[in-house]
Each structure stands twice: as C-alpha cells, then as structure tokens.
Image 1 (cartoon, rainbow, N blue to C red):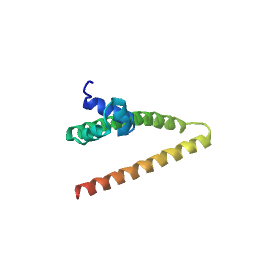
Image 2 (tube, rainbow, N blue to C red; image 1 turned 90 degrees about the horizontal axis):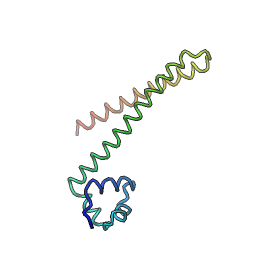
Image 3 (cartoon, rainbow, N blue to C red; image 1 turned 180 degrees about the vertical axis):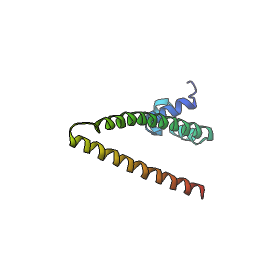
Image 4 (cartoon, rainbow, N blue to C red; image 1 turned 135 degrees about the vertical axis):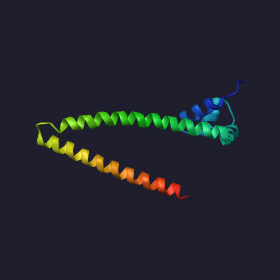
Length: 116
C-alpha cells in the first residue's frame, strides 16, 4: 500500500468534515494512525494553513459578491418607486451599522489578545 501524504490526509479529512474515522476508512488507514498523524506538529500546521486558505477563498468570494450587491443597492437609490428607494436606504444604513459593530468587536478582540 502506498504511503498517504500529509496533503492527502488533510484533504480527505476536510472532505469528510473532520471525521477521522471516515477519513481512516477512505484512506485505508486505522483510526489511531489518523489520530496520531493529526497530532504531529507539522500536520497540525498544514491543517491550520489549509483551513485558513479555504476560509480566505470563501471570504474573498463573499467580498466580491458584496461589492456587486452594494453597487446594485446604490442603483436602487435612483429608482422612481419611493418604496424601493426607502428599502435601499434602510439596507445601506443597516449594513453600515453592522460593519461598524463588527469593526468595534474586532478592535476589542485585538486589545484582549494583546493584553494576554
């Protein structure tokens, strides 16, 4: 049987939603082998980096879609229907408030982490 690389192990683990037993079965490994390999420092780091890369890609996709949505909301501000304008204004204000709240929470979290 061919050796399973760390990359293959991580890929399979993520595909299986973190289920080590399913990963072991799919790769033809024992569950303790998968568990032990995931405890290794370099494997943990590879898993962390892979998850971060997946998250970064998802965030970039969301940001792109948000930009399109904001442009469309801006266009609706010029709509002839006053109800449509009001809804667009309301959404823009709500999103602005949410953004400010998120920024505030992020700053507080950074301060807490620095004070550790």
